[in-house]
Image 1 (cartoon, helix red, strand yellow):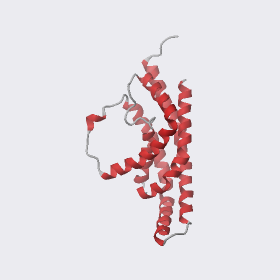
Image 2 (cartoon, rainbow, N blue to C red):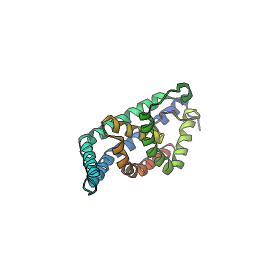
Image 3 (cartoon, rainbow, N blue to C red):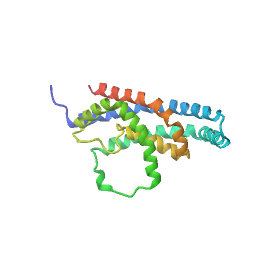
Length: 198
């Protein structure tokens, strides 16, 4: 068997990422639908006046911006693929130490919860995929913003949520729904990516 050229290996890793994005991007719209249902259920609950008003406001906000969030998340996810394939080998994150504001930290906490839920469920598949991609690309580590990392998808979803004007507080009300509808299909996408490489 002849050894695969480096260019062919890079093409294979690029195609794996493309397939991963193609498998995960369609998940965002059903998540938007599940969020809307969850917020509608919350808005119909009785409770104290303040909570009821907050729940109604949350539903109205999502009715106004939910479709934008879905569309912008899908677009940002496709753009993340382009950035991921252009980034190349892992860059040293220590070279860009910087001060981080409270809002950035809070946003990171929100996205890290979703990323952790995916990581916990997909640890074996993700580890196998990481090793295969590193072997193909001849690197020690995936890039900081590599779309194959669970943090990448979680960050896109939360960043676009905030970009459309939806609040962090509203995200915390629906994050269980997001996890419930994202984790298993994303794990399947990792399995499929491994199967493709095998």
